[in-house]
Structures are given as structure tokens and as C-alpha cells.
Amino acid sequence: MWDYIREKFRKYPSQTKVLRKLISLGLSVKKDHEGTPKIYCDDVEVKASSLAMSLGVDRRAVLDILSKIVEDSELAKFFLDLKPSPDFRKVSTKLGMGVIQIVATKATQPGIVSGVSQIIAREGISIRQVMVDDPELVDDPRATIVTDSPIPGRLLSDLKMVDGVEAVVIL
Picture 1: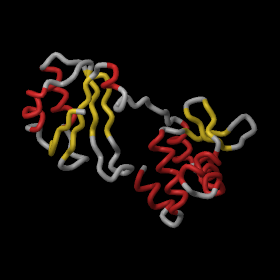
Picture 2: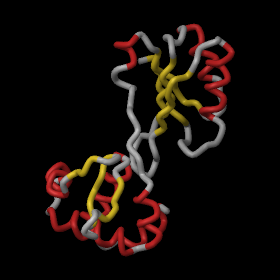
Picture 3: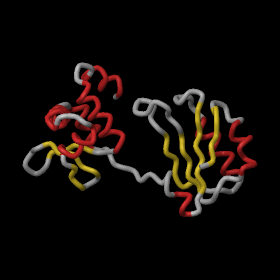
């Protein structure tokens, strides 16, 4: 999908910016009951002007991309099913949960989350959430793992030994 988006919108940086934001927030695009393309956060409508203002682009760039999305069968299918996901990274410690961040040597290397998860499971700690930054959306992607309880510091060396892990930060 990324190659398709890059090619289709390479001449339209403002529209590409809007697309990236829609995807990063999990905002869907679908027609309302009158057939007008709209932005939704689950079932809550998000105003095009609000998104435009947050991105520093003209509202027309947002409206143009919404029309292009619903008119393109590939994009329409993709954006129709996007859903937002809660992000517990910043609030988990307030709830007594553990949070670690994994910095990978190469973000697209397979097996990093699996290796880290096995070590955490071996300790008898349950994982509540895994949030992995998409390297297409984030310059310095990281994986953040939220656990039922804090990760003991003694596990840091084991976690750093997982193939592809550059650093581990306990938050």
C-alpha cells in the first residue's frame, strides 16, 4: 500500500501529509448518508477543517484527498476499515503497569517482538499492549510494550541480547 500511495501522491505533498496523518491516527474515510466523503474516528465524525488546521494545510487539500480516497477502489477499501487504537504508553505507569521501549537495529527485521515477548512471558508477566511505530510514518520507529507489572531491571541484559535489539528503555 505504501508504494501505491507514494506513487499516486508524489506530486501532492500536502495530500500525502494528510494521508499519513489519517493512517497514523487510524481515521477512516467513508461516505455519509448523503454520499459525501467524511473522516471518522470509529463512529465519530472528524471535521476536515480540524484536521487541516492541525497539519497546517488548506482545508481543500483535505477535501481533495477524501474525494480521491472514496473514488479509488484500493484506497477506499483500505480507509474504510481503519480503526483507532488506544495508546497506553504514557498512562500505564500511573496504573502500576510496566512499560518498556525497544529500539531496533533495523525496524523491519522480523522476530524482535517475538524474542522480547518470550523473555517477558518466561518471567510470568502478561503483556497488555504492543505498539510498534511504522517506519513509513515515524523517523525513529520503536516498539513499546505495556505489561501487567513493571519489568524487573535484571531482564534488561536478556532483552538486549535479542537479535535485532539495539537498546531497551524501561519507562
